[in-house]
Length: 484
Image 1: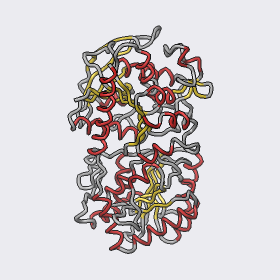
Image 2: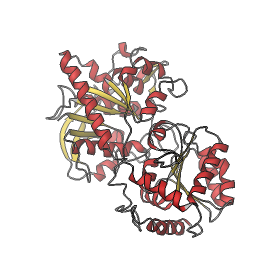
Image 3: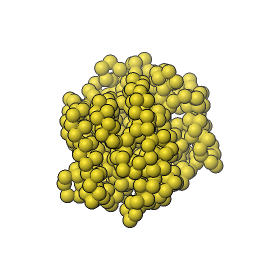
Image 4: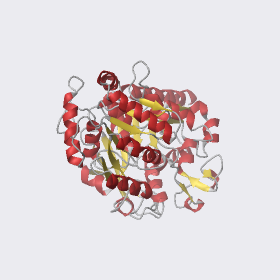
């Protein structure tokens, strides 16, 4: 049994902006099921404090010199009962706005302090100065928000926890002015190309990539992609230099949360033995969204951030042809203002054929996944992606570009065991042709049913991937033991 601290900035169902929250909930639960002593560390946002029951204070301390004391709370995650530590610092986390940005869309100006504190506390819990009666053997960091933790650990000259840095999306790096070194209690000598410096700034992600004992990405293909100039976002040189320490482990999904036979968000539940019930869910969804109620109209589903990365500008260009040939579209998500506006205009133009809900609604995301016939993920890049796995699980074959975790998780429909529809070139024409192919298959009931069942039978849970993480942890800790 390994003592693992899983440090993250968000976790479902307490607080969520994207897939990181889903992974932060399901991977620790899977590790716990495999016998590991895993505990979460998350910031004390209002939603987190409201969502956790039976909280108790386990420590009071100042994270940095000159800063007021914070509280460390202890609780259990809803449903999974994974132990969780909450960094309760109201002046930094109890805000009525976004996790990382305020209402007008700008980053919180004190984000370096907010997530520097989170990183520092993660390191403390893996050191001899742990403020609680528990010390991690390994600190598992996730994205830039916890990227300083490996640096703080390495700066501790005593025996301390080893660290793993998981890159969920290398495009988000947490780059800030050098002046933050002193408030974050970082020595000047770490501000170096062989340290936390990145193009003249202090980079949280660069810190994690440089100081962590091992680097993991959320799919094997993405591990290779981020070592290239095209997709490394300036970090490719460091990653290539550390290529022996870089690996990719494909994310899984919570197969209990995402199960069409038991999903609490569905009015009509179903499984692979009776997909006619899926059609009833489609009719209910059409009615809810104000779409024409027509079981034969191929319904395309999108649940996504509306961004250039997700390829949703390409989708806009090819939708008129698809809609005018009889398809429907259900969209849920938010993101870039211009894309939001263009999708809303599309819905106005195609009343009864297009529904666009700007924002996020957990229940509706499940209902679209179940009610749609085909799920669309034309991402220009996708570190892992979870929605394509949800789609397969729900008998809603995905259309995906061959990149990152999409390449690793979806088998093209023209191959044995095909589970979706895969294309290569990120262009409007190729995307449109691929969606047309998916619709043609949809109208061939026998072919489409085979693709649906292949996806529903595919193992997309965490068991295998969680064991790969455990094997990685043990390799790191054995290396440490051998060096003492």
